[in-house]
Length: 208
Image 1 (cartoon, rainbow, N blue to C red):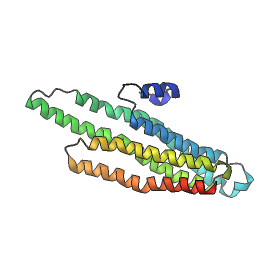
Image 2: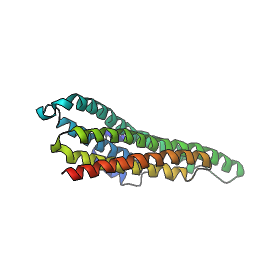
Image 3: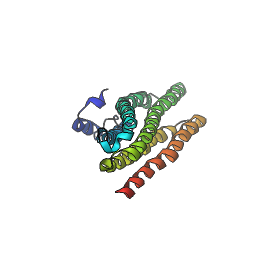
Image 4: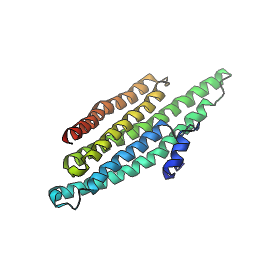
């Protein structure tokens, strides 16, 4: 679908329209890419400075990882949209007869699982990004520390936003054991990495 190749203006116009995608999941992936890009900004403002020569190699490694994650977030914008397509089709299936109802239920269950996996992957990518931003905040240039704080809070927003796209799908699942498993994975990430991102933000705020 190539939403990640649109201009910011075009993406926002589509996002604000009645089109089903991109939606909250794609927006969360975009916010995640912005967050990790800000982390990389800290790295760019650190590399080459004599004051930070002792951590320069660490920063370069972090920047390489951050670039890969930024690319992954951008890919996930499209992946999230693609994962919703089967669910949109499933909602349109007929349900007049018992056979049609049974088939619709079967297709819906598979589509709900598919639609849950992309936002879960966004959340997992956010967790990786939070770990990297934590190091940028600790080792990077103090002149760019506020950018590390913005990165952390952006990633927290991306994490929570993506989680809602998991929960809205699991809420409709008839397979409650699968729903509980997916919800459990999401809640674990919120608990650990939502708190970690907030801790980074608070640490940055205290150092300003």
